[in-house]
Image (tube, rainbow, N blue to C red; front, side, top):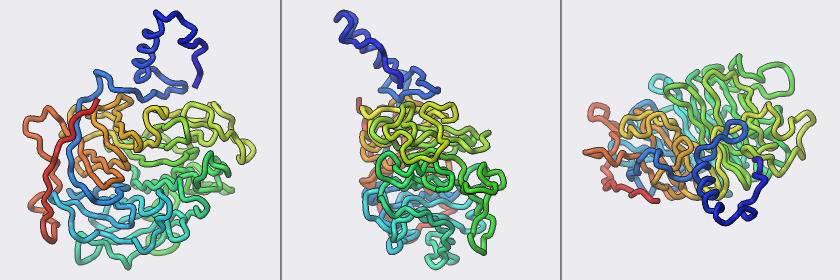
Amino acid sequence: MPRTPLSPRALLPVFAAALLMLASVAASHLSRPGGAQFSGRRSASAPVVTLRTVETGLGQITAITNAGDSRLFVTIQNGRVRILSGGQVLPMPFLDVSGLINTNGSERGLLCVAFHPRYAENGFLFIYYNNGAGDVEIARYRRSPSDPNQADPSSRIVLLTIPHPTNSNHNGGQLQFGPDGYLYMGTGDGGSANDPPCNAQRDEVLLGKLLRIDVDQNVNSPPFYGIPPDNPFAAPGGARDEIWAKGLRNPWRFSFDRVTGDLWIGDVGQDQREEIDFQPHSSHGGENYGWKLMEGTRCADGGSSGCPSGVPPCNASVFVRPRYEYNHSQGCSVTGGYVYRGTLVPALAGHYVYGDFCSGRLWADGEQLDPVAPQLSTFGEDVAGEVYLGTQGGDIFRFFDPNAQSPTPAPTETPERDLVHGPRRVFTPRVIEPQR
């Protein structure tokens, strides 16, 4: 980021306070170099929302999603996927792979589950986890033929194993089906600090990338997936065909706007900047988001050490600048979210919401919201487009309109589609008051 040539200390005291106030206001509105906007503090124009508690005590939540019906599927880092249905957590996990995964270090474990767009027909679901060696693994399971609230543990098929044995951090961990029907995966750069091998810029390595595969090819034969013909690196040569975009450090939660198809990526920074990257629906892939040469809009401290020849220098025009960024006075680890397309909180309509794990701050299109969510580990979306927040402490919240006359939690089940088995677990919703 360009530095201001004049220091406030060099100015007359009568102007110092005014300049500091102007800088504070501008922080949330001024465009950054390359088009990035700095995520600022609360402004009068920010949407007014609160959070409502949906569930507590689930364990370390890593992902929240739906399967095209009114249930919520909650991924727990220890290897279990739980179902929230009809206002209760079902007593039996939907899937338990705790015996297959590596949870050594704070960032390993079961990190995500994604359901095939035609899940109701084929029963396919996919999980992202660290195997016993610490490597990143993508596996496919089937729904149980006898119980819609259970996956069949014997149906496991491994699609992809990405070596990641050296460091326990920077595993990425997101799976999402795009509007094109392909499965997208976000991988971390392999860990340590400043990406020593420059994995994020190496086309022959799957780390530090956004990957895109076709899970409807080779369904019954290895490798159990195929390469979309329009993948940007799908050609003879040393580059991996699965790569869709590169230059990511540790993409922690990305999502597709269910209306526009645009892609939003939260990429965790090193020591200075957290960023939100953007890819329009019209993209043909191949974007380079800059890591390890750039951290947000600044030149990263690791430089080009360890990188192959030909890697562009910092501030090269080929790098895609973030849409939003913030420094470590606002937090220390971004959690990417969703463009809100629900109906229960009109103030958020069309806004991209995201937050920070360390500070719990929440933003909508770069403007800080009132509530905070400490240890914010993920966002999720239900079938109706309502957005949920999950925490490492095991809590789930939902955005709530404080001006609603008769506030009620978003429905999680309908009587005619009751999939609940076992005793009902009762809880009392509560509202978290705005914090300023």
